[in-house]
Amino acid sequence: MNIQTIMVIGAGQMGSGIAQVCAMAGYSVYLHDLKEEFVEKGMGIIQKNLSRQVEKGRMAEDEKTAVLERLTSSTELKNAEKCDLIIEAVVENMEVKTNLFKILDEFAPEHAILASNTSSLPITEIAASTKRPEKVIGMHFMNPVPVMKLVEIIRGLQTADDVYETIENVSRKLSKVPVEVNDFPGFISNRILMPMINEAIFAVYEGVATPEAVDEIMKLGMNHPMGPLTLADFIGLDTCLYIMETLHEGFGDDKYRPCPLLRKYVKAGWLGKKSGKGFYDYQS
Ligand code: NAI
Image (cartoon, rainbow, N blue to C red; front, side):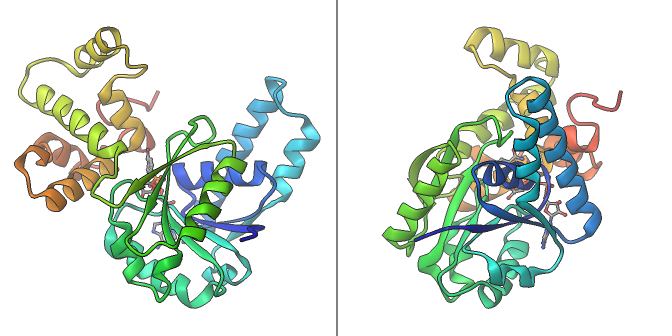
């Protein structure tokens, strides 16, 4: 299947990164969000990232211009009509995602693949909201997208082989390393990562150690490049909570119960780096 035009839905931290790597790989890209100001914010992040590449001598100025020219802002889902691949990166919420996939199914051409960047939600259930479940797949990028090599590709129950192969090829064209997994809550990455983050939050909640101490121990003791609470702030505490809830509901095991402190922070609007406060302060 020949992919030329890609639509990325959700211009947040993941969507803007995905749009950037797609445009850098030569694809024409629509970056879509609910409001013009959200798309502009995402475009701003991309421009800043590319300028940094130019400053460091990793990218020529005319290359940056060419990448930006391949990007088009969108607030009309109807633009999906012109796309061969749509990558959804909106909030980690099943209802929002299935409503969106229903609309995309109407607008996107028959041959188009609908991919989700969900961190944990079942691809099979998202696929079931469309009339093309064989063309729905999980394409789970890591944060920050331009830096991280992995794309976890999730096969839904009905995902067709040629769709899987196309997405594997697109991932390689984006200079990423695709790894195949089947559809189970949290897939592999978050099934293993998120309970560790949740446990780190429990350790703080129970007064065992400060966030700084927890992170220092995991960095120096386990050779992790970043402590779990710093990582949680980078991922977004709302996203972490959604993922824990998905694991808890999907496996029904108490070991996946989200820490009350995580709930409290999310309720307070402390979502991590993107809101300026989480386990650490990012306002200054
Ligand atoms: P974010 O909060 O930075 O961005 C979400 C964007 O989606 C916002 O700009 C919002 O306006 C937009 N949006 C919400 N509903 C929409 C709709 N119906 N139509 C169009 N746009 C809509 O969130 P983030 O971190 O970029 O996460 C997005 C997805 O990527 C989630 O499914 C998340 O689980 C997944 N993900 C997140 C990672 C992370 O480290 N944050 C890593 C890998 C996947």
